[in-house]
Length: 307
Image (cartoon, rainbow, N blue to C red; front, top):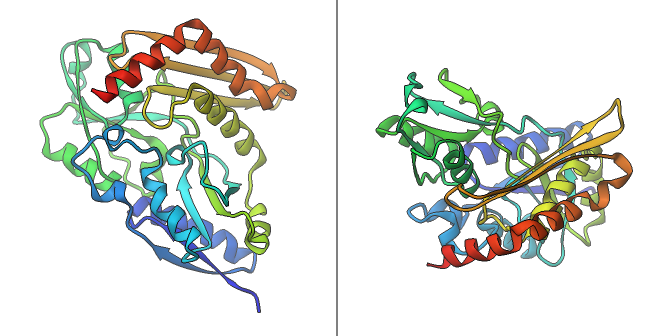
């Protein structure tokens, strides 16, 4: 009797889109599936900034518990929301082919504020720091909630714009007419990638999921997440990372950045290495940043967030 793979997901529109995407891929391979929606703490407590809730992986925790309890077999996540250390017994089973890594600014049809004073909304310390680094005269306000509710809040506000991941909006066909690509902003590690996790001892499911894995995306997201893990970012420090594979030269172009919370300090790395060096690239790049003033900056960030 072939088992039905139960897919755990948050009940937001984007999370359900991700779960259905994995479901379709598994069905196409002949596997039986069932979607199980679970509400996460991150979706319930919306009045506090994420970093104040003090746990990384607030969106993934509820699904981790559902998997460990045996209520679901797998969980599908936006990879950038997943802590770099998975809970005991849970493993990364597949990384799907990456979508765009870009951040975009959704605005209200008038960009004059970019030359003066303005107010931008984001719930991400990384986006906040990079925005203030480029536009020191601007104010950044906190914006939480799933994509749909953030879009609604932006519409109803007097803000000039808000920053979103382009991939999320494209996936649920919510990209508005008024937006610009922020190609100068370094994305969150693994932005635009989806990951599927499963239980380590579930050979049947791991075998099914291994057929969905995209090796190139697996490698570049591994580099970015290793960089994050070595800097000890969790999802609280303003850290950006992007690794891109160049097929012609068989090399990896890596950009990594650490900012102070106010965006005034910036420590960055930008290098191209042969593909053979991918396994330690994230680690060595993070070490370089730490030795270059990053250790002191990380301590300041942690102290500031405790206040």
